Image 1 (cartoon, rainbow, N blue to C red):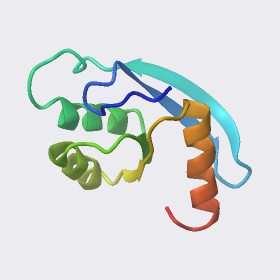
Image 2 (image 1 turned 45 degrees about the vertical axis):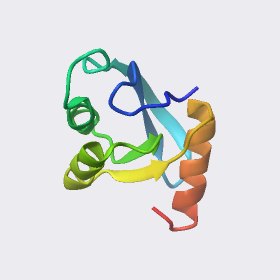
Image 3 (image 1 turned 45 degrees about the horizontal axis):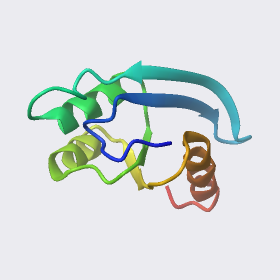
Length: 101
């Protein structure tokens, strides 16, 4: 299941996808060192996923500072909760196919 908080998520699953075919070409789980840290966890998490090459974030709504950081890093935000990583990926791909992201 997706974590219910962005900056405090214990890890992030980075999924590389061929957008044309929808085929998953790589999966990597990175631990979030800010999960148990002090303030500023959201922006640090945004930087972490950007450093992994993320272009889209799918998960719970990030806080205002994390949201701003994601936008500044050029990462598209797709808010979704209560689903598995696979379900989130399917919804993002569906949105991309419709031209929504």
